[in-house]
Length: 150
Image (cartoon, rainbow, N blue to C red; front, side):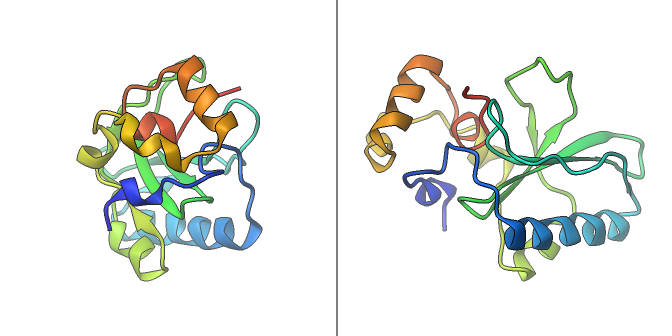
């Protein structure tokens, strides 16, 4: 299933989900261990200004990444770690993605997240979400699904 099919009303809003986030977090630890990396930060919950969960990891080669989770879409993504004030993520493939897939989560690829945002799919969002899109003007699908809207 392409990630464009994850678009639905509510997907751009913060969506805390204790059960889904517990599964995601367990898979973060399992997949990071499997690729001989380490978890470097505590998990952060969605909040106003960020619609997704986020946790920091460091791969065996020393590269720091953030593993992101949109609970409304059951979607996992990877991004380069950056300063909190930076809003445009540099998406990367999720290391150990098979762990998440076996747990029933969808793992987005870099190519999927970097797709230009196509207006023909925006009708799937709520009216409030479409107004946010018009205001913030995300350019990529990943910027919509893992957003900074306030």
